[in-house]
Length: 509
Image (tube, rainbow, N blue to C red; front, side, top):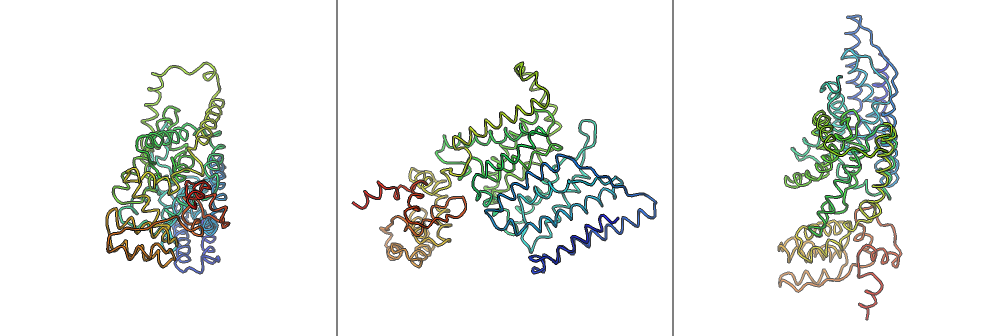
């Protein structure tokens, strides 16, 4: 019983750490969680004492737990180097790990089982926190997520391959439940879910880092087929959509970085996914299509679309047994594999699939399917698509200009004001935006305020060089360059033809 008591005491100590003790609601949350563990431990001890039942503990270090945790740790480190809140959140993540150990041990003993002590809580907690954080005033819900994940793992089970197994991925199930609740009550703003999804694209080469971090798990546990199929499905859909419509489905990428992360380190739990390779192919394809379809559904109900990667997993978990039955039946109708492939051992086939995925990934990366410089990040692509008649592109340009205006670009405020005055006229909003541009020192906006009552004509021009760090940023991290010539070269490379040398020479002439 010293085990859960030690975890509860450690959790209480977190309340006095710098960064936590200054926030009374956060400190109280840790103390209440620690108190809950102590009450549970006391009740369990009293019951075990009365019945004479021993509480057994066994050390069980399972490879898939620490390998997954190491892969997730790599993502945290790389992400944290380019987004400072990750470092500030580390104590809160570790506090959840301590709480998870307490819950796991107490739940095992309460259910009459031996507690298997190992690295099990790490991948569950790391996975939850890669996708959703509650803000300090609401952080008690983070502990509820952990408790819900363990309760679902222990109580919601079925028989699979002749043995009892948990149905739902213990990290994705609470994430999906929380997503549904937050969407229903319209409370996404009590989380940092949107900021997490956006900031994970800040680090350079993030797609490649995620891919490389996941390789050891693929080599060891054979989940390559799911990830590869999910990525290829989403990418091919994105290509087809762009070919048909002329714009990008996910705006700034063929596959958003947070969705790509989910395809590697969220839905790939070997315990809650199909065991047959053909079943895993279908499982991966369904996840890729699920993230795509949910964007439409979430947008239709006015919910943030970043939930698209979280909601499909529990639904797919329910299909696992059916896919394991369906997969072999489909495979039987396909031509047999080449003799070389058929002669490989199970490990050899697993390594061959990873090798194929390496080739596929770097091919997609080489043709611009994933990477840091997708054209959809930048305004010029969407502005051109708007000019040729895409309403979706015009809506997105308006959104981009509003963001740039809020960040202090007078030029963007002027562009937004003109758009608000002419596209779907909203004179009050147009006047406010043009006035904001004038206040920020963009002279053309001042003149356009006076022209607003007359309905134009409105004057526009290129953004000032000093505003380029705002308007050429795209979806990556902040532009730190300040040298005018370097900024103009960067703008040219991101599609702003006004700042390319021939265009500037011509305009000067």
